[in-house]
Image (cartoon, rainbow, N blue to C red; front, side, top):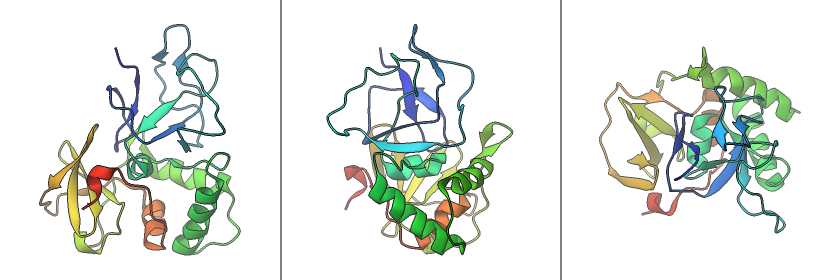
Length: 205
């Protein structure tokens, strides 16, 4: 039986046998005795995206009173949910993300704590995922941005909108003006400034 530890673009945590390309965490949100989630869905404003392999270290998932191992289809999914690259296991990516975040958001010498504070406001609305109004036409969105329409999530890449699922992306779909932005606005500006998230192979042409 799969554990409830897979994050969707809306930030929900579901149970699915599909593991994904990245792991990450929001602090400790599980009971190691039962390997089940607590009622809370975060215990830290630093929502991280980590590599699944780092210096040969292995962890038994949800077995320790330590950070709760979450998993993401790809980095675009993690960014949409409100996560950002980990500065410990993904230092180069985190530095690139911070540099693009500064450029896109027109700030200087920003600390990751400052980015976490902005993201925490942008990703949540009274404990639920905050959806944002789409202020530009779909064709002007950068690769890696994600949208919500109804109950479905979509990835924008190379002029296409691809339907998200736990196992990968499906073929292009047409979205209307009712679509809302899942990717936090500050992260969207980071993508516009040149940061390119790692996408699942099913998103590639």
